[in-house]
Amino acid sequence: MPRSVNSVASRKRRKRMLAKAKGYWGRRSKVTTVAKHSVEKAGQHAYSGRKLKKRVMRNLWTVRINAAARENETTYSKLIGALHKKNIDINRKVLAELAYDNPAAFAEVCKFALG
Image 1 (cartoon, rainbow, N blue to C red):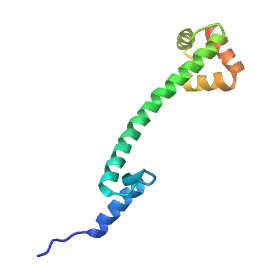
Image 2: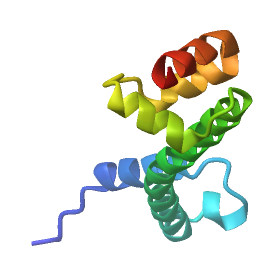
Image 3: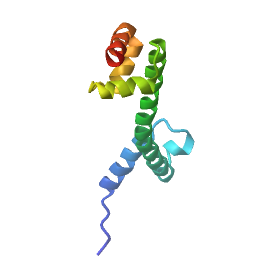
Image 4: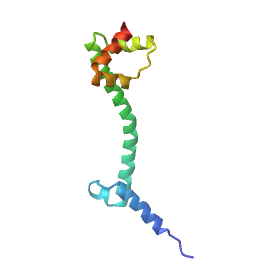
């Protein structure tokens, strides 16, 4: 009995993988085996990039809060410590947005936390 090969599914699988490799340079976008490796590697980089993005954004928020805090005669650590002591639950993302978009509101938060 001859071996049965599901060529429809195989073609669909390869086509889907080559579609993910669209825009890659040279053989990476045309040869199935090379494209498969590139797509898998891209997925690994995307996965780690999503984790790295969170770290990078938190560092950016810290820098922005510290810069705005120093304009209000305090430091980042003193401000965060004062917010925790007063049980003010405002996260760093919102604090950074206040510092960047609305410095007057950030100054009020600093006054309330430290005063």
